[in-house]
Length: 182
Image (cartoon, rainbow, N blue to C red):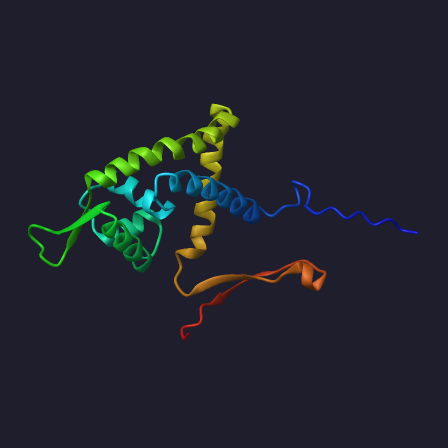
């Protein structure tokens, strides 16, 4: 009689890099979301305020790019932030159709309070690693971004991957043109 082992999680060497990166990201996002929620902010609001503290007066489109979200998603965040008094939008002095975004004193205060809760989370990561490991992790993550970004930078091409588990054989990766219609 054959004994079947039922391990609920794959061994560390079997876990896909994509899944591990996603788990790491989600763990960090959950922890930071909980931290900034204590001061009444959402994580997107916190990220936007942090960027605005560095670059006051940027446009919504610039802020969206800096925060890695779509302009439409950023507009939803900005509307809520404006209603809460965290930001103000003013016309650019020379370009009347351009709105500049600035944090208000309430926004700056909220950001400072949120940082006290959020920054220790990233500090826990750096404390768990040596200085050399932190730099190596940064280097490796940048290389991952560059490797995947190579495909993302070519419009109209996506990589598709057959699921080997569903077919019982090696998966294949192919490049396929992106469908134009929706």
